[in-house]
Length: 386
Ligand code: MG
Image (cartoon, rainbow, N blue to C red; front, side, top):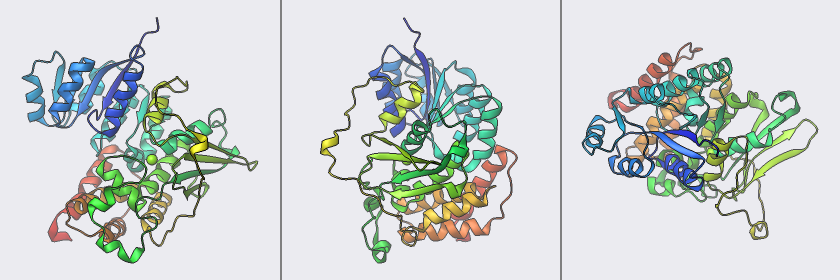
């Protein structure tokens, strides 16, 4: 019998964390969940502990950790701000799924890389803000970072067997659904409410990423993520609007051929690929029914209407700390929008203004990026400075 792979999940209560557990459920003899980490949702975590019996549980909110502790669940409970660092240091895991938001995931990801454990990375912000540092460390430690983002999982599959020679790749083509406002006139954007923006046409996702998809910032973050993951220059990464979300991304090679990866818009596919990489295992998810696809459409992105995408390209090309500042500003501005404190077009105004108000440099440590992230968010969230 094959020894099950020991899986650790940072962010087990979020959308990706819960779908990772659905993938585990599909292969009960091949995966063993040994460590889970979450912020404060004790109800969901208690249920996960009862079902999967992880040895280690981390809760970054102390009261939540105390509540779990009192339930006597049989797992070691870690708590507080350093709990993520601690769980990746202590737990014996064969692959970590990193799906937590915020800068906490930066330090934890670096700790996993230094422990030489493969990472299934769902948190694109890690590569956006610290791509150079993380990828350099991953190469030094020979650690595989396998993307869970559907577009990057697609690119990885299209590049399988050829990625050793990037000279053969002429273009990475990221597909984008276009979000809920693709056909909405730009002059009505000021009246967009959080509820409108949360209604994504194809994917069910968390609030922050749903807003990012509606502004196309999500695609911009993915362009930067692709740049660091595959080491391809920005002018060889393009975005195409593909409303059907059937093709998850494509690679155009130097001979002019294009390989694409198709599948239902279901995150369990890329999660499974990351966990079983480079193998393909039979699964029970709904499959692609080709005759039911009436057509595949492709459009150029409208950069005037969705200026966040251009901003992300500009910050990516500028390099250094520019993407980290953009990412932090976007996180803060999206938070304000979700709280109904700013209008939808204000998100771009705040982010672009913030990017130009900071001077950018080549970061030499994660601490610098974490400090910068705090500064940027402080500047945006402190009413006096706006
Ligand atoms: Mg994506």
